[in-house]
Image (cartoon, rainbow, N blue to C red; front, side, top):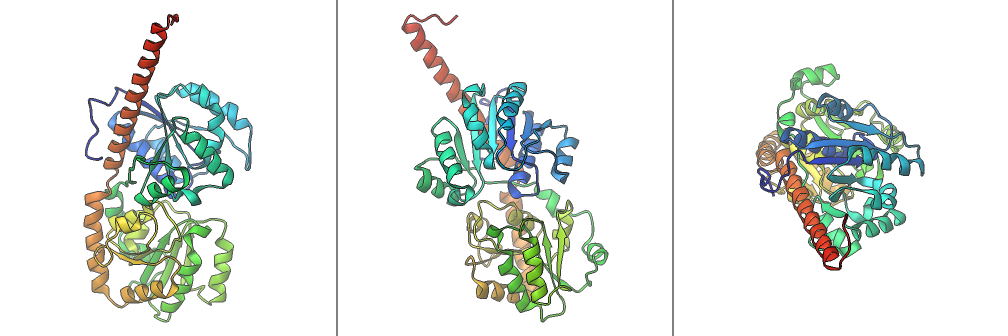
Length: 400
């Protein structure tokens, strides 16, 4: 799927509501924001429901600037039974043709399924299904996928996981997309960004943009960086936050790297950070279809990434980036040393990555694919309703 949606299938002003736990700084949240904005520009009528209160991210600001309605439901941490009624009220208010869910929201939506008036229900699976949720969450997803909630995979590895875990075949596969130009053209020059953040003009900055959680394996990256830190030009820049931040800071202290590793926290200027970097590194143990890798490629950066999820589909090893086996410290260290010592290879990989990103990753392709899927599912639902009505009339039942 890609290009432009099939206009013969696309209803006028189709109404879509996305439901997500929160508009935090993760890849799934960015994907939803990109999709909402692009669909709004295409003429779809879109809205979003966030289970939690606003968290003050740049994504919330973008949605506000684009005038996309977002209802925040004020969820408490842990199980919050108030969500059933609040979700039901929000869904009735939006009266969407399509309900599109993400991450952990199905555990609140499934009991409300008989209230939904939507003609299509879609759930994007953003990572490897076995790692996506706990036992209860898997049971809920299994039940949801049996009740006409259509799962969408973001990568072949995710599709394989859905078949293995839930017995699902022929799952729609729609890779993530990004606004490529946003990352290709930073608004601050490389020299100005480095100067403003205390980095020498000749520094070699290894950058990672990821939440500090177990799946991202920042510890592996920090230990690998220790192996190249003998070169005084090297800096490690970590963008994000999360539950493991204090543990990672302690690991940096134990390796005596405090002056070489920078924790920047959650940032809204990712295009400028990538523009100022030299090498992007993703050290994850598992992924779905990571936006951060696509963003770094769009920025024209040499990328080192673990061979997980869809990453081998995004990167051709040795041509548009470098891949290593997940958890393999010696491999990662070897690749970091290789790029540290070869500016020509950094440039070559970055230029090839930029071209690949422009050719394959633009958000319009993702948006058109989802629009086509919505339309196809709505048409299928309408045909099924028509068939039920015909059977009812044939049995002598009154439809009035």
